[in-house]
Length: 230
Ligand code: HEC
Ligand code: HEC
Ligand code: HEC
Ligand code: HEC
Ligand code: HEC
Ligand code: HEC
Image (cartoon, rainbow, N blue to C red; front, side):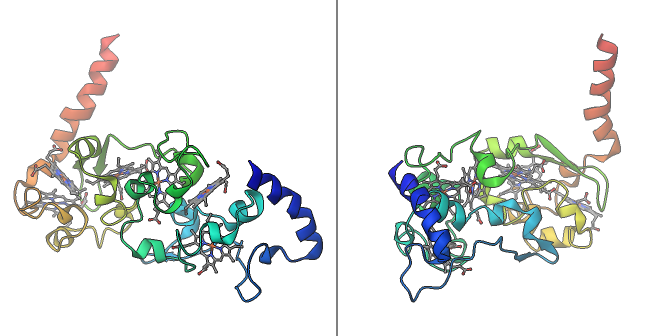
């Protein structure tokens, strides 16, 4: 690609001149921060374990791919960290429609966003979805069938990151928050299980709480059958 070649050709000269930060910027513009950025998330979490929050690198785009500032600013991105996120439509659906990163990451100018092999390049994991999650904290054996919920037609963004992080175990790290009261207040599962979008959290307890015997019926006996099967 031309832009890339130009970028590499320029790189040596820029490094020598010690003015990498100002590649194609006007003199008045702030320097690009190529260091990883850290943000707090929720109470304690830090970006380093949340690749989704730190997947964009100016260095890769400006220095290595050789793109000028105005290929992104201000038409595709504001020059302000978190601005896209604040718009409320910064998700895979809008990317696939050609917004934000999707303006270039369309499989033509740059690798696509439809994966599966590309998920990893941006998100740092292959985004393998769990079939089922069994929560055991604070109480045992609450079943969440991830596969069924997705197959119902719910978008990933209806749960991530609004109700749940994209990481098994995250909600259970805060058992004092992951309670029925939180569900009744519209958090976690209660975002939908409110009696209008899906059955209410104060009804049908045993649909979610399958109990130890329900768990055994579902998983242990299956495993035993497999064992005795051969
Ligand atoms: C390939 C797209 C792209 C290019 C090219 C690009 N940027 Fe950015 N820039 C971004 C994104 C994405 C953000 C974060 C925006 C957001 O979070 O909504 C950003 C944010 C910024 C910020 C805010 C940083 C902060 O911490 O608040 C500044 C300043 C900035 N860019 C300057 C530049 C300059 C100067 C150039 C040219 C040397 C440049 N950018 C080239 C995509 C780009
Ligand atoms: C103006 C076009 C443009 C935009 C907008 C853009 N990219 Fe890129 N990106 C490129 C090009 C060109 C490359 C290098 C070619 C390739 O890898 O396909 C690249 C490479 C990458 C890489 C691989 C290099 C690396 O850092 O490891 C990642 C990851 C990436 N982009 C993520 C993003 C994300 C996330 C966004 C949105 C926040 C974004 N890009 C927005 C053009 C763009
Ligand atoms: C109805 C809610 C819901 C929907 C819709 C949903 N997820 Fe999830 N997802 C969850 C929950 C709950 C967890 C576990 C979070 C926890 O333990 O705190 C999870 C976890 C994950 C994980 C972490 C897997 C691991 O091993 O750590 C990935 C990846 C994921 N989801 C991807 C997706 C993708 C991709 C989509 C869209 C196709 C999607 N999810 C749609 C609720 C949902
Ligand atoms: C070019 C980079 C890029 C690629 C490739 C990419 N994503 Fe994303 N993804 C993003 C960005 C940017 C966001 C919004 C991040 C934010 O909200 O901070 C996002 C958000 C998400 C979300 C949460 C919001 C939503 O849209 O549901 C899920 C789930 C997700 N990506 C799954 C995937 C999967 C699965 C793949 C592979 C098929 C993939 N992504 C490939 C950049 C990418
Ligand atoms: C984004 C909305 C949404 C969220 C969040 C959500 N659900 Fe659901 N859930 C639904 C919908 C819609 C149905 C189907 C309609 C109904 O059964 O009322 C459903 C059905 C179910 C069912 C019955 C069908 C099945 O899979 O066996 C169970 C059990 C269930 N959800 C558990 C949970 C649990 C546990 C959580 C939290 C970890 C959760 N759901 C979070 C929307 C959601
Ligand atoms: C939509 C699914 C769902 C339904 C319906 C549901 N729960 Fe829960 N419940 C959860 C989840 C998720 C947790 C937190 C994870 C865990 O404890 O494993 C939880 C936790 C609890 C806890 C421990 C935390 C606390 O709040 O003290 C109790 C007790 C509980 N549920 C009782 C009930 C009773 C009684 C009902 C019926 C009136 C009920 N649940 C209905 C999903 C559900």
